[in-house]
Each structure stands twice: as structure tokens, then as C-alpha cells.
Length: 571
Image 1: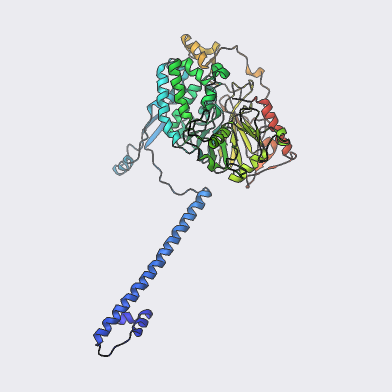
Image 2 (image 1 turned 45 degrees about the vertical axis):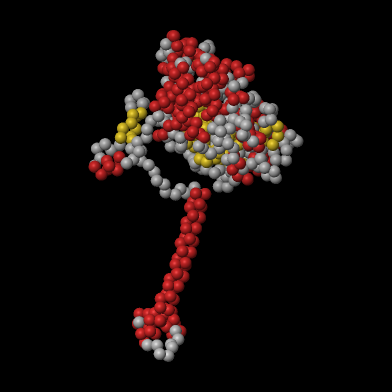
């Protein structure tokens, strides 16, 4: 009993037990021990409850800490897979693959055998090879085999896009591209310089903002290549939907003529098979996401801001886009698409920044939206709409495409809206037009342009087609593909003004222009970059002006100049 009586609580319990006459000492001790066991059991239960409460509190604190780290961009440890392959660049630039550590010890070899070996999709790899050397594949590109391969490729890529949210959430570094419009030459330029070894072996992500077909002659090759990259690198390459990814637009032969995607499909493969290809590609387009957000800070979309879909709201929220069906026709709609969600989707692919003179008149409503010059129910958005959208969603910038820009990338609305255009042809911008893209690189936004003087090895003039290895029998087919130009030679130097060299330091946007296949001087125009505006980004993600006036007048001039230079792509 000594060990029991040593506990203060036990002593109290023993002293409180009454004794009855006639009971023996053994009975008394047994009775006291039973009472004591009950007391100790209750005490243990109390302690268990306290421990359980403490464990619940610890779990809650850990969850809160994990959420804070996620919001601050601090990544939690993840289970990374080791791809048990090494890639070797051969003399001709072709990549070969082999298993890593083939001479490893038995233990290491056993561990490596558990790692996955990435399988290669043969059809996707075939399309990528065609993209690299289209002049060698002219017969294939005009064959029914290409049509059936493209239909099969569409079937493979559809579930990948359908599984994605209608608004993507990405991290930097991310490259952002604007309209492609069937321009295989400029797309090849970006592939040559930004993911030369392939998307799998290139750090960062690649986000395309839509308009892959129409206008240019190589819409089929462009979508085949991008779909193939999506199959090979589904978590690195992303494609948003533009207004040309709808049947009402890419099937409008009366407006686009030979440059209509539908007519190109028919001309290439015949009416029946061509229409099958056209429909298969559009079924993929129905599944493309509408928007993306980079680093929870930069909103990316093809056209622009959608109007609020709910009463008493000053701006739409990104969460609203998640309610859009994963398969949506938009124009024309499927029967299950609601009017509200169809308007939300249409605004994302059609809207434009408002002209500066509209900002000061009565053409914009109290939320900053008005009727677009495009007509057809499209809207434009002004400074107030930009203010509200950025504030409600806690974003800093908007990156969009949809409007032709001779300088590749333009700025508007107080340098908060970037317009990216990634094709230099087919939009009446002249021989000096460039193709541009944006690199969102953690705390910096950089502009990369293809100089108009860049000498490509992709598209040839008829006079030099034979020297480039195009067989005489293939020249006419190559002309129809846009790979050989049937125009007289005219040196670019005669039509291009001398470049303006701008030194950019401590700016949010660096502009790199490629000339003759290598990074050249930093070339830009004063109206197109933050550097020339004297703008820099501070920690609050806002812009300030240094010795350039009020900033607002500069922004108004930029808006007008951008839209005067770029005739509206009304459809």
C-alpha cells in the first residue's frame, strides 16, 4: 500500500473512505483499493481527453501553417519521381534516350528499376518530327494518312483538356504566347529558341492564349504540333481558347475565304474527310480552358475581362469561371449551356480594352464596360473595370491577346494590361512587324520578340526553293502550304527603319529581340515598354512613374496608337 499512499490524490481517496464496525482489515483494504482504481481510471481518462485536445490543436496549427506556406509560395516537400532516362544530343541535334546508370551496383540498379521510364507516344512524336521538317513531309501533309492521324491525335488529347479546370493556376517561370493564326514560321522560331531540346527538357511552362487557326495557311500543322506537345508534356504546355476556337468563326468561309480553317480542311483532304477533321479539331477546342492565373497575381485570357455574372457585384471572380462546363460550344452553344455562363465565356474570348476617348465619355457604364467596336454583342473594358477586377481578385496584371500589334507586345490601361501577339503575318502590320511573347519569371515580366530581320530557315521564296531542297514536283504543294512564297524578292533592309536601342535597367520588363538566330541588341519602341515609360515595379505590385509626366496621359496615347495600328480583327 505504500506506493498508493505516496500519491496525494490516492491519500485523499483513502482518508475519505468510511470504516464500518465488524469489517476486517483485509475487507477494508480491498474496498479502499477498488475505490482507488476507479479514481485513477477517471484521472487517466481526463488526461487522455487533454492529450486528444492537444493533438487536435497541433493538427489545426499544422494545417494553418501549410496553408500559409502555400499562399506565400513556399512549397511543401513533394514526392518527386526520378525519370530513369538520360537524353543525349547527337551531332545532328537529334535527341537519343538511354537508361541511366547502366553500370551501377546491384543495389542501385534495383532501386532504379522501380523508377518509371516515360513512354513515348509514337503518334505525338511523329507530329513533332513533321513540324520540325515540313518540307520533307509535303506528300504526307497532303495525304489522307495525315487526316486520319490528326483525328486520332484529337481523340487522345481531348480527355487531357477536359480534365483541366476552366481556369488554370500556374507557377512561374511561364512563357505566354498570343495569337498564332496558322503561322508555322513564327511558331517554329519560338520552338527553336525557347524549347530547343523539347518542352520536357526545358524549365518552366508554356501558356498559349488562343487563336491557333484561320488567316494563316498552316492551321492544321499548328494544332497538330501543339496537340502533340500537350500529349508529351501535359503539365508543362497549356492552351486557352480564343474566339477562333469556335465553329461560328473558324467555319466562316464567306469571310475568310481560302484562309478559313474549314476551307483549308476541305481543300487539303476533300469535302467529306476535311469536314471530319474540322469537327474533330473543334471537339478539342470545346474542351480548352478559358483563362489562367500565374503566381496568383497575373490573369491570362485570350480576349479580356468578363462582365460580372451576379447582381450587386462590381467585377467577376475567377471562381465564376470554374462553373463553365468542361465541354462548351460557346458559339454555337450546346443545349445545356446557360445564358449566364455563355456570356461569361464569350466575354473571355471576345472583349477588348476600351479606347481612351471612351474612358471620358458616356460610352462605358458604371462598372467600366461598354460596347466593343467589333459589334456582335462583344464588349470592351475600361480603367474602372480593370481596377475592380484586379482589386476583387487581388491580381496585379492582365495578359491577353486578340489584337494585332506590330511590336509583338503592347501595354495599356496604366501599364496593367499586356497585349501579346505571336504572329508577324496575315494582319496588315507590314514587313516590319514582329512576333512576341512574354516570360513571367518570378518577380519580373520580360518581353521576347522575333526581329523582322531574323533570317529563318523555314519558309523559302520560290526562287530559292530548289536550293533549299524542295523537289520541283513539290513546289506547288509547298506554295499551298505557305512553306514556299510565290512573291518577288525584296530585301527587308529597304522597308525596315533602323532599330532604336534602349538601355533597360531596374525595370519590370526587359525586351530581348532575336536577330539572325542569336540574341542581339535590346531593341524596342518607347510606346511599347515599361522601360521607355520609366516605370518600375515596387513590392506592392503597383507602378510608379519617373520623370514622365502624370502617366495617365501616356497611357491614353498608348491605347489609341495600339488600336490605330492594329485594324480590329472583327471576327
